[in-house]
Length: 210
Image (spheres, rainbow, N blue to C red):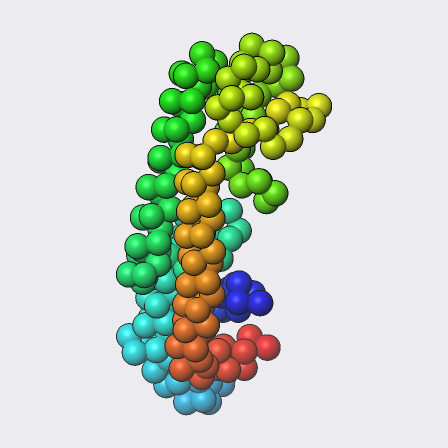
């Protein structure tokens, strides 16, 4: 629900920022029969609403808080730079991801397997971060697999397994991820609340374009 709210806020911002200035410019240039009536009815309000204290301020708010990188993938998220708590959680996430990938490389070296090509690093909802090898590769490392690792699942697509280091890092990553999502939701509610103060821009926009 919170992501839908942020989506609505961003869509409104884009529509308003693009359309209202064009409408204002068109009214400025219009000199037809109803010029005086149109300008007295709409132009003063448009000048007020598109000024630095209204629409431009709202656009700045959205640009600062929306993660534009995720936006390219159709995901509406709060930018980690918008909030210090969110930024700190993001840094912890990235550090843990780096440690997990380093462990992946080290494990591939210890098992004498090509990293990524033979020893995969998967992430799923059931087990979190796990190592995976094909059933064809399994006999080559069977002894180490049974003594140094915990086998989680054996299927047609391969054998999934973990160890204490990966499980510890994966559990910590999941904990930070849940905290990050929770913080995101709280910030979305806050941003939507702030945007309500610009509701007169939305009503005027709807009146002109409706």
